[in-house]
Image (cartoon, rainbow, N blue to C red; front, top):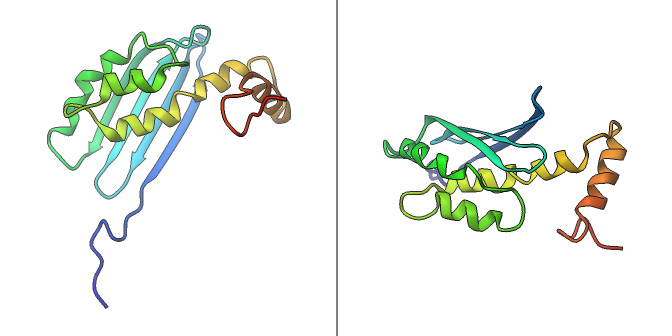
Length: 147
C-alpha cells in the first residue's frame, strides 16, 4: 500500500469563541489548525453598532515565511460594520496576492456570530436565545425562513 502524503491524509480544525467583555464589546476569536498552520485571530466589535474596533492575529505556525505579513493588513478591518456587504469588505481587506484565504475563511464564519450576540441580548435560556435569533435573522438563510 502506498504511503499518503500530508495533503492526501489531511485534517483541519477551525474553532470559534465569542465573549461579551466587561465593557460590552464583543471579543470574537477564531483559530485554524492543521499540519501547516496554527493561526489565531481576535476581533473586538462594538456590541451596538457591530463595527470592528480592532483585529489582531498570531501565526504560531505557517507554511511560508511571508504569511505573517498579513498582520499588517488587519488594520484595514477597523471600521467595517458586520452586516450587508461584509463579504465584499473582507475580500477587499484581505484578498488578492497580498491577502490570506485562510483568514478570510475564518472571518466569514466568525464575524456573523456578532449578529447572534446582539440579537440574543437580554435572554438567558438557550431556547429563548434560539427563538430571538430566529426572529431577528428571518430571511437571512434557509435555517431562518420568513413566516
